[in-house]
Image 1 (tube, protein in one colour):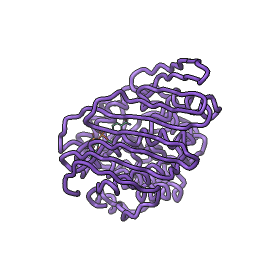
Image 2 (cartoon, helix red, strand yellow):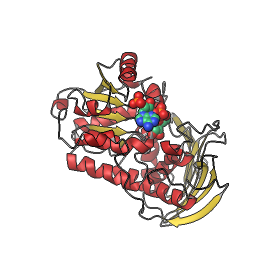
Image 3 (cartoon, protein in one colour):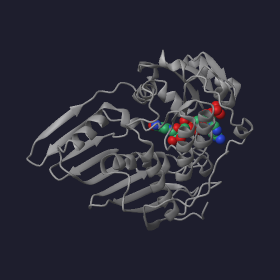
Image 4 (cartoon, helix red, strand yellow):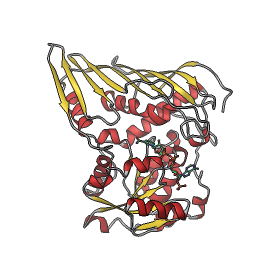
Amino acid sequence: MPPIKKQCFAVHAGRKSAFPVVIGILSEFRAFGKRQINSGVKQIMAGKIRVGVLGPGRIVRRVMKDFHKGQGYELTAIASRSPERAEAAAREYGAKYAFGSYEALAASGEVDLVYVAVPHPFHCAASMLMMEHGKHVLCEKPMALNEREARLMVDCARKNGVFLMEAMWTRCFPATKELAALVRAGVIGDVRHIYSVFSSCSLEDPQSRAFNPALGGGALLDIGVYPLMACTLLLGSAPERVQGACHYASTGVDMRMAMQLIYPGGATAQLMAGMDAGAPSQLFVYGARGCILMNDFWHPSSFTLRTADGGSREYAFPVENEGFFHEFEEAARCISAGLHESPLVPLDESISVARITDGLRRDAGIVYPGE
Ligand SMILES: NC(=O)c1ccc[n+]([C@@H]2O[C@H](COP(=O)([O-])OP(=O)(O)OC[C@H]3O[C@@H](n4cnc5c(N)ncnc54)[C@H](OP(=O)(O)O)[C@@H]3O)[C@@H](O)[C@H]2O)c1
């Protein structure tokens, strides 16, 4: 990590990363080799998609609050690095199988789709292990630590003919789908500007995932990907220029990242992701003929449309509990339809966002161990 800096301003144009390949972080994965066990793929056409959870930590606890509300899939297995944790989680969440290693889950014939829920530096290796064994993968955000890893994952999915999707749950909410449809239909005219802030006040704990460089800490990768994904959805994947302003945590990761994006054709975006500034997390989409305001845009239940002629309309899509089940329904729907990626969360967008965050981190001097 670089020495602690207080601020950094830098500019870069969207371009490919020069980072070295980082795979096999979970070294034990290597020993498992590249056997092809396309166990679940044929059976799923007849019934529910059987989901295995890899890494039962904090996000899994939240996901499980309403997991069972979704259609077309069911929980069958939990895998942990510890057999005891796997058994406890399987009991708690109602899974039939508990695997005391990730390799055992990869080899299992009882799982079609693996939900990869480990910290970001391990997404690539864990997902690739599963895909090499014929498993479909729903991988937590950010899909990878950097663009090189994202490309490795996409190549691996294509080589093995399996489904891969970043668990960008925001995209699967009815409110997000409706907002995108309205913008596509030209209700606010051409999008001219996006403003979005996603920030919270967190205690600076150097050991926690959010602050620990070894666990991919930092606001940009943890929550900055949400406003960036809003931009790729509404303005496209290829900004002409990206400019970042970073304030660092004591561990050297980004405590706060402010971003400006400029797109071909003149559209612009101002975004902020932070861990030390409480703010309502909002998305504003400004068009040539109106504006849309969405509160809590990373798990939205409503938004307001205002048109230039003075009109205003509220859209409401009540969400009970967390709403994570939408992304599992989307993955199950795609897999059952024989798709290898979701049209709601295209893999090209996951790669593009990784390219943008690579550039911002490069300019800010933020390099993770092993990169
Ligand atoms: N969609 C959302 O709203 C949302 C919210 C929070 C987090 N996330 C994403 O979910 C992922 C996990 O976040 P989290 O907060 O759930 O993480 P976490 O609780 O710190 O870790 C999750 C699990 O990963 C496993 N693991 C594997 N290797 C590990 C290692 N070297 N160090 C620590 N844990 C390791 C552990 O399970 P075992 O040891 O039992 O296998 C651990 O319980 C992150 O990529 C994050 O970005 C998404």
